[in-house]
Length: 381
Ligand SMILES: Cc1cc2nc3c(=O)[nH]c(=O)nc-3n(C[C@H](O)[C@H](O)[C@H](O)COP(=O)(O)OP(=O)(O)OC[C@H]3O[C@@H](n4cnc5c(N)ncnc54)[C@H](O)[C@@H]3O)c2cc1C
Image (cartoon, rainbow, N blue to C red; front, side, top):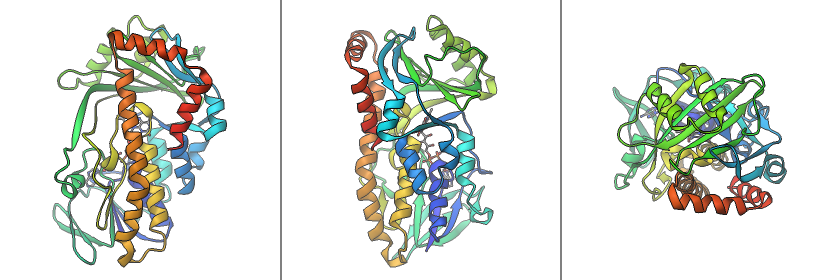
């Protein structure tokens, strides 16, 4: 079958690689001038790793699996609030991997033959008819397809065309600053794989190892008005977190400015009525953009890619719409559940005042075993 994938982010390249491997004639259109993923680190959760296994794309990522340690939430001084046991969680549901985003993208796109990818080619709209879909670019028709995968990300133009009644994106009033740096010698490791929250300001700091040599950190804080540039956001965080655990400001200060990124956090205003419209399937952030609080966005996109690859295996062009309805039935309930959980987590960790005090008191009372079990349940999603 002829399948067009629109968008070469992590979700789009995973889908293109899976569908290509399954024997389809795939074309991948990317508006950017080159195939690449910018940014810092990314957490791939056990469910995302299992999806990459299914797609035959996990070998590189699994080398970066975290084997042991303690995660969870801490107060701003690094004192535990809710402790999870990584080794126990791993026994229950599998490994978490923390990887360099650019390296992850490289390893997933590696199996794609160069001739299959068309960079510098934005897709403007889709024109479906009874026998297929015409894919239209800014200079006219680009391709004819039996099925289209819209993996054009959080700001998806195609989502807006397929579901014009949907409310689109909503800003969460939060901003994310993140960076990556070489691991300083003699680092205190007790904060690794965990997040610090501050009930005075609702800000958060997270820290993860990327292999043996790198560290990935992020902050999440309130955003009033337009997002600042990376330099200004970095200064704001250094001031906001000046009296936190000393490692926080040390690491932010030690990060090369070129490895610091800032983003306002947006999410879908509400769930889509469907992930499918006829012969077109939405995938990844185009279908279920969520706050990053559970580290699930890319893992959900990998699950979409694995499901599409499996459900379109051996399909005939006349069969596509029916097969895609099965994709919708499999992926929408579970990805929407994770999207709701991510919004709840974002709400919980950004509380201030009495609500945050109560949160911290309750979190301290949760036994580590139970916290690990709850987290593990989510990774089954
Ligand atoms: C701060 C932050 C931290 C995060 N941390 C994590 C994490 O730790 N773990 C995790 O799993 N997820 C995380 N996420 C979420 C994750 O990054 C996304 O869910 C994931 O990258 C989505 O991939 P995607 O392929 O759906 O979209 P994208 O990566 O946005 O890719 C979309 C692609 O489509 C292209 N495109 C757009 N429009 C067109 C068009 N019209 N024609 C052609 N091409 C087009 C774009 O150029 C882009 O290359 C985080 C997100 C943020 C903001």
